[in-house]
Amino acid sequence: MSKVIKEEIMNNLNKSNNKLAIRLKSIGISKLNLICLGNSISSGYSLSSYTKPLILRNENIKQIMKDNSIELNQYTFARTQDNNDEHVFDWIVNDTTLSDLSRYNKFDMVYMNSKGISLENIEEYYQNNNITIKSLLMDSNSNNIVIYNGATGSYLDNITRDGMHFFTYAIKRDCVSIEAILKYIQGINRNNNSNIQVYLCGVPHLLGLSDIFINSRLKKMVLKYANTIYVPNIPKNLIYKKDESGYTLDLHYNENEYLLLNKKIIDEITQNYIQNEIMIELDTILYRVNNDYQKGLINKSVIDLLIDKLFQEVIDKYIDAIKFFRIDLNILLKKIKHYYLSRRPYDFYYIKKDVIDKNQKRLIK
Image 1 (cartoon, rainbow, N blue to C red):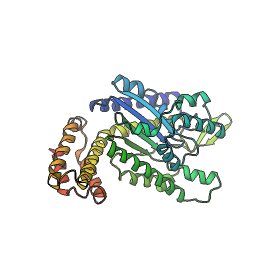
Image 2: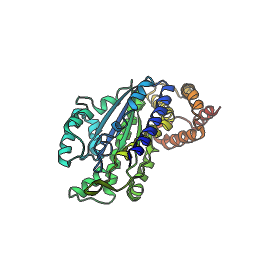
Image 3: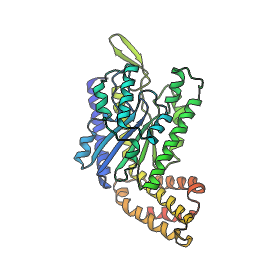
Image 4: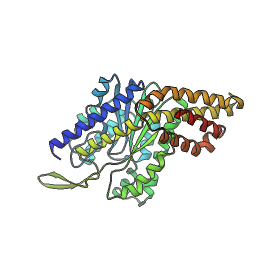
């Protein structure tokens, strides 16, 4: 693509950054962590252009957030290889540091002959310190957004490392670990007064196969969690002009495609952030009231009144933003109801259906 097209993409990305900043500011967000997890897409690996972490390619977002009185911190926990989702889960629960990821990525750079990246770049990108994913997620004083790219590591390990499992086995293997990560994060939200949101990105479009075998699973997966949104993939090429010597096949994005992916992610966050906050808070309310009743901390007679009171607090907190940004309440209410009904036998059994119905109707008034 030409330089003019890249500038147009950047301008559109900056417009999306501004819209997100305005929406976050409207609900009182003053500190935000963007945490990018996962595979080589999160690491920004590219054979056809250069390698730079996905979220750091959005070069102006930090200043735009600052202009709106929001302190933004960006963290990348990703590798270009050895990045199957079981390993990502291990990074979270075993306190893998940014320094560890820096060392891993230096090894990957040499092993994979990564293009357009130096040892100095890696130290800059991965911030050579002892911050861990878990420490960020457990900080309930910050607003955390996790951008996740995965579901390809096991498959690529199998075909490139003389594996014995092919077809959908490797995909299922990765999806099990992705779900473990989503369960872990939702558990933090419920028990730690946190509001971590997860944006699970679709695998790059590869002749339609990735949509059929992988992305269809991811779309269904996100419906199980109050805090998770699916981010559709973007159109991409497979064959790229490398240089004067010819062309290269690349399963990753090129420079402009990574910018377009950033815009897609930012747009999805803007569109869903407030609704996700509501979903997270309602999920936590239902989960805690249900558990407190079983612990004997509250009587059955007060459950209905307590749910009414807590739901009203959530409505009061977000009603102005819902009206100002013209959020479609019918879509939100359908999502709340579907989520509640799907979770009720396991998490919310002692909270009656008619209490949920009554409180949903209050949102429309």
